[in-house]
Length: 433
Image (cartoon, rainbow, N blue to C red; front, side):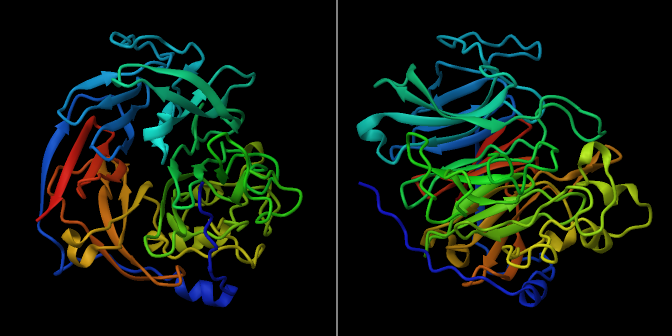
């Protein structure tokens, strides 16, 4: 039996939203806990996500290798149904079986992982992966059953099989196959599975009531929608919120259970947004919206980047992440990364007295952007989200005890420690002293 939350979440007027989304500068936190780290895994291939059992068993995904598990004593078992490696990689040794339809390409592959809240009873683990089983290919949420000794998985069930996947470059110059692919999956405190997706560089997807792209989905463990009372009548019942660009971070407020997302911005304005059921994120990159002209392949998501001399504020006005002029009832962002786009990806609320002043605060990780071969903006920020979810009280930069990197996943283990995965191939364990 699962318990459904009855959220008491707030809307804001356009004027209030504009005022509350003003940038907040990151600074050093004099109340930060003392941090230390150990490296628990190395030589991984784009580790993308992690999920823990209570005994510290850790499932983790590598985008082009698939799903594995690290047991509490450190033994690592590659599990069944890894990714079919279409990019010329042949490191399948050790996997019991290859799922011929699963593949990696660009930003797509085997991404998010989550364990069922009732794992001890049903042995279910879930992954988000690209699949060629359909034509065209799609992203799927796959449920697997793990055997007792954590050496194999079986009983594959594709509980969602119709999340859009970007098949080709199309006619525009942005990205490639697999771009804007979403991919984070998390069980909420209400017992339902939340799934984040991306817009695939398709202008019509974000505001579509039927496409599962550019959405946050909420489903039961069989993939059935549970949002009929939250979304408009013509919406797919699996859609919890819509109108997003590329959501790759989601977690839930420890005090209320409200979902909060981290979203990539288009050359400006990475956003943190507290969600409400049926809410519109306000992203609409179609041409002729808010006075925009025709755009390559009917996608205006990067149009300001083509206009020389525009600063981030002007770009945000031309192609807003949250278009409150067109959609005045859209959910306003609580924070916009000072108007910058730096690849904000994972999100996690820290809990526990060991974190001191950071107990209950939101972490967001940044992959950074490249200039002349140098990455800029790779960091983890610690954010004090206001009680109403419409603004932030404070933003500080975590003093990193480990090397910086393209921060891909932030997960708190059952031991209260922070686990950090970076694209460069490491997973770190961070302890607050």
